[in-house]
Length: 135
Image (cartoon, rainbow, N blue to C red):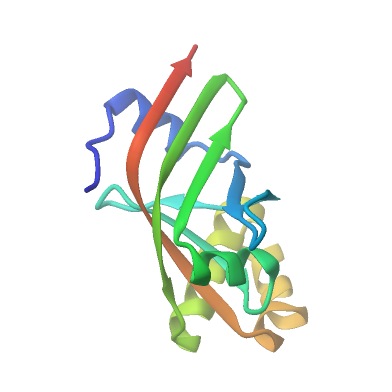
């Protein structure tokens, strides 16, 4: 069940930030990764990863995740993910994220040099809990 985000949280998430993604390893320990993300119009969070990474395997086994942002106060989002394995969607979404974080010229270079050679998986997070202490 998703939660409605406040305008303050939405504004915070629309800024370019680098959250830490927490997934759960097989042994129950946390696995942490800095991520690119984008808040979508429906209130979900879109991320993308190379297929086969530990975080991707963890999310397939257990879809519960958290994102933590510590800049400008802190914000923690917890919820569950859906993984989209469609290669066209994965490539489109990593390009969208590269544009957001690095601009058009650098995004094209990254796609050509790296991303186009990888199998990419799009991650859609449904936010179920928000802990906020924003300044």
